[in-house]
Picture 1 (cartoon, rainbow, N blue to C red):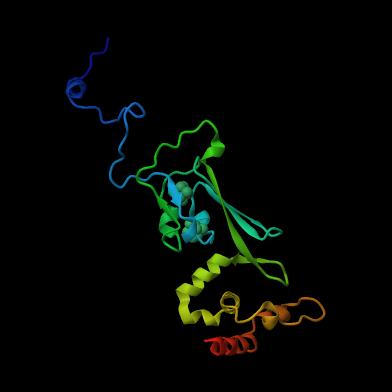
Picture 2: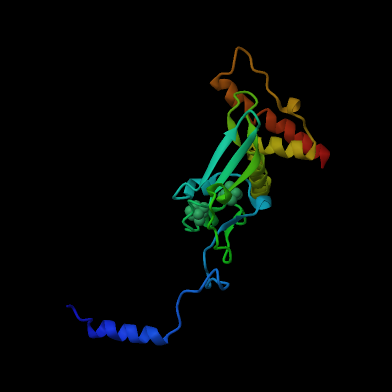
Length: 206
Ligand code: SF4
Ligand code: SF4
């Protein structure tokens, strides 16, 4: 028969007289410790649907799907896969799109679907080649961030014009002949023609 070592006996005696480290949740309410990382909580008003958090999420708990027909990006957040690493919070481009709660920890469910949340963000789709550019909110965010420097991007400028109702799509359109070619793609974003027109509109509307 093996006898317990003195050190183990000492630990056993100490534990008899010290309070338990764990709480009796759910029988008693549990108060998480300071800097506890709980459920990531999304602030939809400050989330622009940029995909950054999905790109840095190690277990792929955040995924995106672009529905080009409906013109929306669907963001799926499956907290059943979350490891509470905080990467989404640290890399969020707005700094406020997602925050790990220091209070929400009880995420045990019988139905895994209950731990999944969805968001929808309107897409900006190229009207010529139908490629997804990004979400409209993402571009508006970049525009606000860049300030006057955003004028160097024709995409931001077009969106700003639409928002301010200074120019419609047809004002900025470039006619494509003989099918869409690489040279036409350059024409569409060419600042030599579009920027002059749009800046003129902006000054007139100011
Ligand atoms: S905390 Fe980590 S694992 Fe959880 S959603 Fe954010 S990036 Fe993904
Ligand atoms: S990084 Fe921030 S703004 Fe971008 S999709 Fe994630 S939560 Fe939203």
